[in-house]
Image (cartoon, rainbow, N blue to C red; front, top):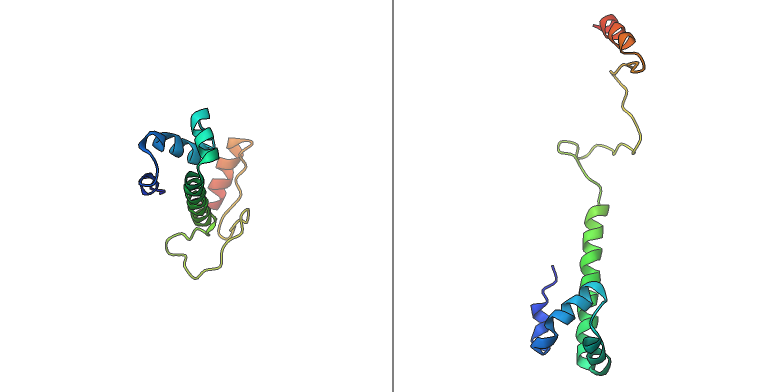
Length: 108
């Protein structure tokens, strides 16, 4: 998680909350925007903080994009999404519960 306190040492305390708001949302009050427009060091801090945020998001996206491996399945080939393993299963007719019960009795 991004630690904004790392950036606060180089920034006047009155701008801390505006800085965080700007980095997190891209929005800020007119005073902070005017300050940011004229202060090169603040522009550099914002650029560094936003770069850190992007890196953080990229790491999180990579974690979500990584394939999920269920316990005990390591080394097995993945089952494609939508594929069904029907070996040892039987079809049940859910349109009419009586038929489903009759089929269950037949296979019992």
